[in-house]
Length: 529
Image 1 (cartoon, rainbow, N blue to C red):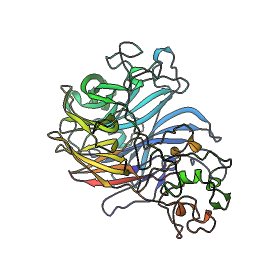
Image 2: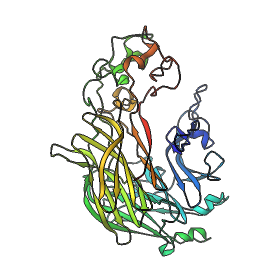
Image 3: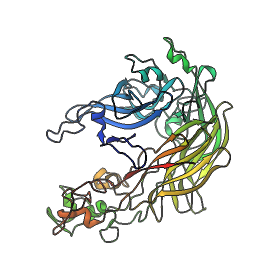
Image 4: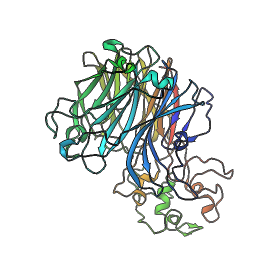
């Protein structure tokens, strides 16, 4: 099952059997995000995550939902919506649960009062619980209100219980390291671990769930001000939630503790490079970035007049857009696994693979959670390349795969992977699917999103899911080229092709190789390490 910010698909086997996409608003029972007839807005659903739990044979899907008025105004009320399949078949019926997170957070320093946004939810599970973590940001202030942990009875969710045990934990003050709030730090992106199979859970201490986080970000070091840090650290944090079996009792009694683990230095990575980064978007010189080319185009005859920019704007924009450098994330922890008795995680960092300047790379960790020590760790990078958004999947045997995006000086954004195990660490890397063009989405261009330069969004995370001895990977990349002439099609005078601007659907008018305002894709790959 593959959810993203617009729809969800069911994916299985080879050849893939992909059911029709269902938009998230419909899946969770809301009105359409946009009613194209009336213009009325529905709830805003974002940050979807999915987990198949082999022990209960259930699928879990979580989204953050922002309540929205018909005129598009946010009410500031937001909640986590949890969908649980009623059987092991995700094409069947689902049960829906909701957790209001609007008031969950700490008024850090007395200047960060709620309401709060429960941002960036991620999910994990152990033998007893299903866990969601968020980052709480005050809607009306600049600081940070702490990572929030929500622990629910997995058995009750799987059974479709009308009432499910829930324990909420605010991590503010949970790390004994200094910050601008005093002698402690809050957790930030405290990512809960997933485990392969049905018997890899830690049953000690009444059942134990583990989490990993990092602390180079302002959220950890400057939660009061929300800014001012140096964005460098040589520590990660192991979070241990014990006595999770009590989630199956009327009076749950969980115990949360932390250990600070010394690791190699990591820091905010530079933005990714891609072929042509920084050069002017031009329909002759950069034909595979047609949206940027169109913004700069003042000469092509179109059905709206001379200049392709007229197909996108009412008022004339500046014609100075350049090929962008996609975002490389920050230093927050990415997907975490508990497998073969170890904790596995990775994050984005700055590296210097050939001593010619910083590039985006990956810091990876294999941690003994009981001792709180790093068993193995290191970096992955390559000269002329940027590696971003890692996601690790590890089988019960301790063999794993790390997925990530590879882009670079002469490499279009591609889906890549490397093997990982607890003996040699990370092995050689390879592209599993080569990128076919530059990232040409609307977030790349000043005229469409503002900023100079704009923040070119590149996903927010990848994903890895273990299936027996294999690992499924979901990685963002640019799957298909779309040249300038095809992008314009019949909207250019004398042109032919799809009657939907920018999709490159061709004369068949079927699904195009890209969307009008973006050209990224998600590569689904199955590897057996």
